Amino acid sequence: MRSLSIVLAILLSAATAFAAGKAEHIVMVVWDGMRPDFVTQSNTPTLYQLARDGVFFQNHHAVYLSSTEVNATAMATGAYPNRSGILGNREYRPNIDPLKPVEVQSLDAIRKGDEATHNHYLQLPTIAEILQHAGKRTAIAGTKPVAILFDRLETGRACGDCVDLFNHNTVPASAIERLNLPPVTPRETPNTREDQATTQALIGPLWDKEVPAFSLLWLSEPDFAQHTTGLGSAAALQALRGSDSNLARVLKELDARGVRDKTDVFVVSDHGFSQISRFVSAMDSLNKAGFHAAHDFKQPPANGDICSVVNGGASLLYVIGHDPKLVQRIVTHLQQQDFTGVIFTREPMNGTFTLDQVLINTPDAPDIVISYRWSDEKNDVGVPGSVPSDGAFGARLGMHSSLSPFDMRNTLVAAGPDFRHGWIDELPSGNVDLAPTILQLLGVSPPDKMDGRVLTEAMVSVPSKLSSIEVRTLDTSCDSSNTVWHQYLHVTEFSGTTYFDEGNGYSAPKH
Image 1 (cartoon, helix red, strand yellow):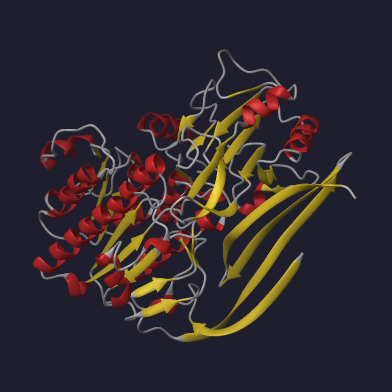
Image 2 (cartoon, rainbow, N blue to C red):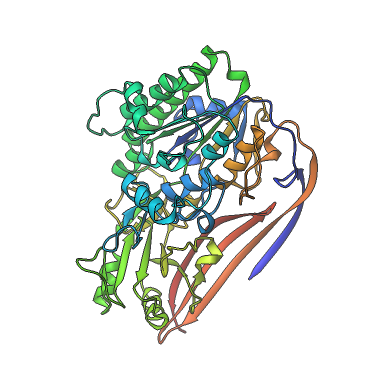
């Protein structure tokens, strides 16, 4: 292990209290799957100008897994998966369904999960719930179902006038009638028309009385187009322009209502993106080696069965019975495969990192997590970043969820009365920082300490303090009969918050 400490004179970290910000409203717009290198004057003129007017966070991070539901939960709770409870888009949750994995953002999984845990499907309160209990109104609109994770509870709501619109449904369910949404149409590529309808629902009926204290708009693009047509494709670039147009509509509405100068605007993405180099199957590889793996079970599983849950650039392996000797045999097999990048395990194993070291050891965690081996290979239009995928999309299309820097680095821009003008923030930041920052700006204290920090260095008026950046590299290796396995993970610690930069691994012949 190597470490480097760099002492920096910076503006204060999250630990120091300061008065609420000048803004009366916060609007957060999520561009699902937006890589920061696509923020250009030609691709995204509105977002490009907003970054020039405010702050561009140059060193921004997703949490791992670098997938949508995981990072939505991090944004909503200010916590890493080990505390929030969500570690993948798809997980095996026997208390919800003992035979097959669940989509963690599905309404059915959420309702069954809350019933089984007394409303602790998410283990921590969300930013919307915290603000509502503080007497502030919220409005959430998402083209994708993931938006429900911000404000999911149907009963016992602290705000009767607060609505969460997610994928043509609402919480509370009765609110759908007054939104007057257009009919559901077949999904297009790019999915701009649905995003336009979601945007109109936010700035129209959800903002009917006034702009709430906190608003969230979750757009489906450029994620959909990049998954189905690849990074930098004509459709993906068109999707960027569509999201940029919807951002422009939000800003125009704030101007028309005379509240733009009283509003802090965040534009963020949940994760980055990579090109799929090839399709792989952890399940097939395990079965060929004599293990008993399946994506779902036809009958209740027996000890030693393995549920292989695909998450694109990562796979989760649940070993029924948790036999440590069997888990180690699986790990040894994976360390000899050319698709394996980094292996995490619930219990310490030879040549792995633990789930605790990447902050994903949830109560429902798998025994093994595989992050697939990435490279900086460019696609046909010159976009770098490539990773194998265990999932539904084919080669040369888009995927994420790995520890590639192209997946782990994502977009954040902030502008408004509380933020510096024309400033590039080079300090590490992450999606986990959004909730504590927004709560601080609105003058609301979280009920518990959050994992993220307040992004005070980007603000116009805060006290200064010395803080430090610690950059660490975790390394591990182990020998087999003919090969040596190596893996690493780059980690940055700053102001009490952990950011995962990237990690990879490889197997090499013994000399």
